[in-house]
Amino acid sequence: MAENDKGLLRRIGETLRDWGPFRRDFWYSPIRGPWMASFFSLLLLIVLPIVFITGLIDHIAWNPDLGGTNNRTPDMGLLGFLTGIEWPTRPIWLYRLTEGIHVVLGISLIPLVFAKLWSIMPTLYKWPLADSVGQALERLSILFLIGGIFFQIFTGLIYIQNFVILHNFKFNQLHFYGNWIFIAGLVLHVLVKFPVMVEGLKARGVRKELEKSLEETEPEPREEGRLVSTDPAPPSISRRGAIAVVAGSALTMIALAVGQTLGQRWSWLAILSPRAQSPGDGPNDFRVNKTAKKAEIKPEQVGPNWRLELVGNTSQMLSREDLLAMPQYTSSLPISCLEGWSTGNQDWEGVRLRDLAEMAGMPNAEKVLFESLESTDAAARMSFMRRNQFQDPLSLLALRVNGVDLSLDHGYPARAIVPATPGNRNTKWIYRMTFMEEA
Ligand SMILES: Nc1nc2c(c(=O)[nH]1)N[C@H]1C(S)=C(S)[C@@H](COP(=O)(O)O)O[C@H]1N2
Ligand SMILES: [Mo]
Image (tube, rainbow, N blue to C red):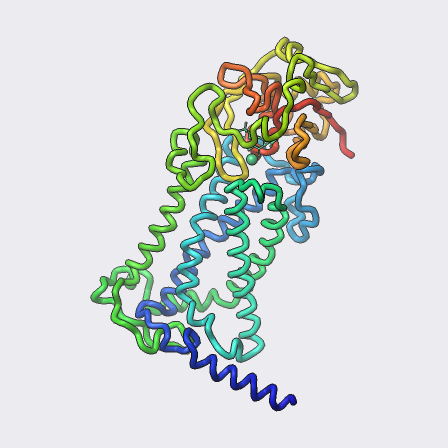
């Protein structure tokens, strides 16, 4: 029986070896080879760490140690050190920049990853899959790497489309834990392949190869691996031409995505962004993440009977008139969503959060909890901010924006607005603020 199995496996292997993409002469591109594969690796080695690090920065920006909905990925493991770092409030565009880079460069990875896959395609069709334990490990790392990258791009892309069906899927967990698979694959791969990449580039030189025209383009010499075709077709594009196509695609992705982070004036550029639609130019006509209707805010909740419950050492009820009678301040701040889009600066007017902390008798509280009238979405219903955030003179409980009352969609009667903070921490339709000491 065992003998027969072996025979069968071997026969399958032999058949596969001679079939379609498993055949060496199936691959005929004259420009595929170690140099091309190494060049695309180099591009990825520059972009991937930036996307990875700005992703981690996003976790710091949420202040996960404050708990509640700030912490959607408990058990951060090795990355636990990200918890407890005080996210700064300056520069005011900090999160706009880091998250903009994360999303925009993340999108530009799509053509880069496909180019890299193309450049190593024949090695994926190798039979037997591995000749040694080392090779098996290497191939396993590639599986983690490719699987991880696609998973991250896929979950990220779906999330920023804000599809209604997928709105509540556990994006934070998926995108965070999926990252582990990806980074494990990447670290292993770089450890094994870095010297190979350097060799691959050195053998032909980066500049020298990029200077070659189509006429000067020739296949690389046959190597031990399977990248160079055994039967190359005449070149129809130079290596630099192929690289230009890939880089041009990545730059196009960037151009089509970056408009959403540059504010309203450029949003028309972001044609692939669901937030690109121009919302008009009235004082309240800047992007809305979730409308009051979607959040099921009822008119009687936000009418004259609305009160802000301010909790600290004491508890008091404040009407909108009470709040408007307090010293009013204006802060020019953007909304920067973790989906990557941001508004330009808006002129928010209202009461300083630190004045409210004072009023609650807890100017040195550790944190403040905002609670929203909305009941449809547990994740959006509340948010914590740290002391450095509510003490910043620009941090407001906003009542008005751009010279008029807040619109219902932007959080009337009152919303939080704090510099450099992820958009989703700026709770709308607030009915209670609770200042708290350390638990
Ligand atoms: N109560 C509540 N507050 C909320 C949200 C929400 O869905 N519910 N969305 C948040 C998110 S994700 C962002 S980006 C900002 C968007 O504010 P805007 O709709 O006024 O532009 O509000 C935040 N505040
Ligand atoms: Mo957001």
